Length: 330
Ligand code: PAF
Image (cartoon, rainbow, N blue to C red; front, side):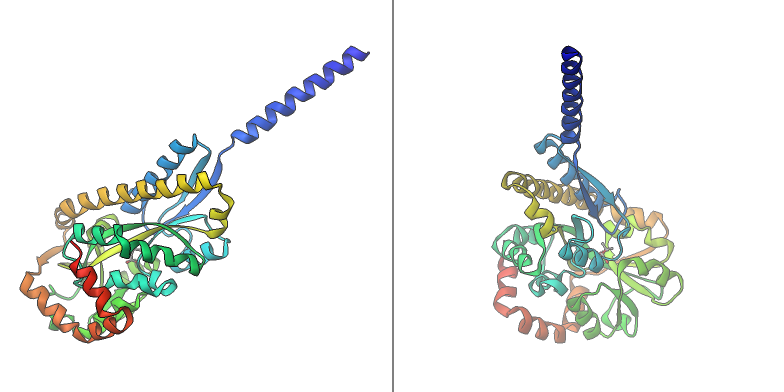
């Protein structure tokens, strides 16, 4: 009898051990949200982040992806992160970031960055880091900057060649005060709305135009709803890889480092994708049927001059000194 009981006890100990180790081996789920498809630059960032975390943690974390605004607009996603009620991680555009940390809006100033290398140098330097750090006070943990490329205008009215062509143009902007001020100053009728509303609004003719980088224009096949693409390159469009404070505080210090390094790997993947999109995007858009014109340096200067009033506001909000430091960054 004694030996039967001993065997039962042994068997149950084995089952418990097996069950416990199976449970311990179950990876922790990290829900990650972003606005575009899995095969966009956003998906590239999320995939790069996931791969690096999975490798460094020995597979202890598994990302569940919510692409294509499946968790709502970026403002809702960021609010969910703050409250710890939504996903644990997100890749978001600069669209709404300045509503959470006003300083983030400085990167949205039109015609501020010369090229991708200039943008990256600023984001990777002290200015970029000091903006990331400010997110902690807004109940968000910003781990790395991402990017989308340079924004260009698409519309259904006419090729945009001079500021006057913007007169009264109903152009969707992100919910971003810096962009709204710039288009207002240039005479357009900026209509801020969240990304999930944009394609239906273009289809229904509620707006004439929108502006986004080639990475987005190609990923969203905007030629299906827009006739003209003007390569204006008016804004270097940034993004961020963010996690919720609840999730961050649940991690050990070692795992926080894994997520931080992983976010940098996601940033590198996003930049690689954008490099390709900037090279091949125009041909893809033309093949889709959109008519393309490119603004010369002189034409761009006319648009910048037309946005002069907005610049007065930017100097007040961000200080001329900070803007000059960004321009001086090599
Ligand atoms: O225009 C926007 O809202 C953004 O660039 C993107 C990535 C399409 C969605 O946030």
